[in-house]
Image (cartoon, rainbow, N blue to C red):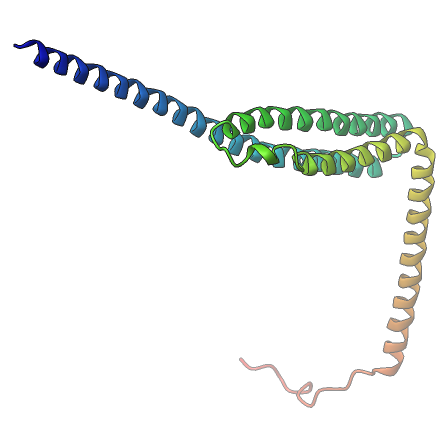
Length: 196
């Protein structure tokens, strides 16, 4: 092998080795990009499920409060409801922060997204947080003034009982009137003997 052939072969080897390294680096970047996208999608799904879960828990607890007569359990349930909503705010903020880390990993690979990274990234989480904070406030106020809930429930129950009593009186009047107005007629076949 001549010296020029040796140099040519060495150059080919270096070029192929450099191309292989570039391909590996590109493959690694692509894997990082795709993994970040998968994590963002799964975290986004969880982000939308968590507030719905908090709404279901709060609704169930508030319904439970309406079925109780004693004040201490009502206060405990309403305080727990407020606590659940406040903790949910912290959970979704933390989840959105983790999502932002993956979004920044993905934005390193695309040149066009770098200028618009800070625009409107916490709108949904902010709106959920405001809603959950309002719900927690209502739960806390309900725990501070449970007698208002109790009096309202009593007045609704007494109104329901009065309404049912009025309906029963009207029903009895209608039945009495129907007996006096409608007289049963004798069937023309009443005198016949039954068939054997």
